[in-house]
Length: 317
Image 1 (cartoon, rainbow, N blue to C red):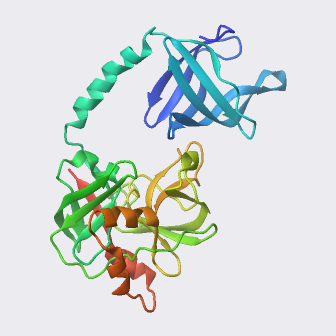
Image 2 (image 1 turned 90 degrees about the horizontal axis):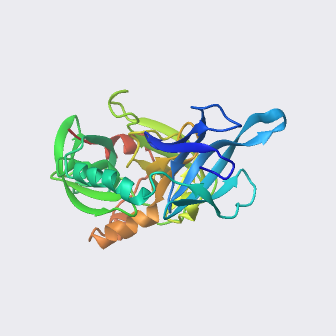
Image 3 (image 1 turned 120 degrees about the horizontal axis):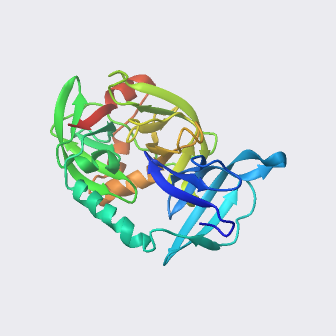
C-alpha cells in the first residue's frame, strides 16, 4: 500500500512479473499497471502506466525497477524512459508482514521440484571433431543426465562434462567422431557486425528443419552492463537457446544464443554469450581451442552447410 492509499498486488505469470490494482483513485480495480521481466541483480525491465498525460489518460512508458525489502517495507527505485533514476521510495507497506518468510515456503517447493527430471529442448553445436558439444546450461539443467542430440537423423545420448551456471554454458560429449564443427573466433565482436543465428525455435513443434535468422551486433554489453554478453537484433525464440551466432562472412562463432527480453516488451533485443567466454570455458575444461584453430580452415565458406552439419537439436524427455 502506497502513501496515497493505492493498494496493489505483485504476482508472477510465466516469465513476467505483473502488478494488479486492488484499490486506487486513478486506476480501475483489477487493471494491470506494470509488466516486467527479471534481469540481473534484482532489476526488472518492462512497461508501466504509472505516468500520466493530460486528462488522466494512461501513458505507457518503458521502465526499470529495483526492489529492496526491509522488514515489511518495500523500497523501490524506478527509471522511466530516459529520465534519471528516482530516489529510493520506502512508503510501500507489505502484506504478508514477513514477506521473506512467506515466499520461502514457495522457494522450498521449487527446490524440491529441481530434484525431479524436467523435459527440455534447445539447440547445441559441435566445437571439436570428437563429439564435444556446447549449449546453454539452462537447456540441460533439469535433464539429470538424460540429454540427447539428434545427429544425422539419429538420437544419440550425451554426457554432461562441465557446466558454468554464471555464464549459462554446458559442455556435452557424444561418443561419436563428427566431421564438422564451428570454429570459435578469437577476435572481439564489433558493433554493426553482420551475424547469423541458427537454431530450433519452438523445438520440433514448428518443424525439424534448422532455422536461420540474421542481423547485427547491436551492443557489446548485455543487461546491467554484462560484459560477457552481446546484444543482437536477430530474432531469437524459445528453442534457440544454446545455438551458434556466427559471423556472416567467415562462419566463425561470435556468441552463443542465450536469452531475450519479453516479446511483449520488444522484438529485437536478444543476447548471446561472447565467443571469448566460450574459449575460457573450454580452456578451463581442457579443451584446447588454439589447436583446433591451427588445424582448421574454411577455404571457400559455405555457411549454410557448416551450420547444417555442425548444429544439432538437443533434448531430454
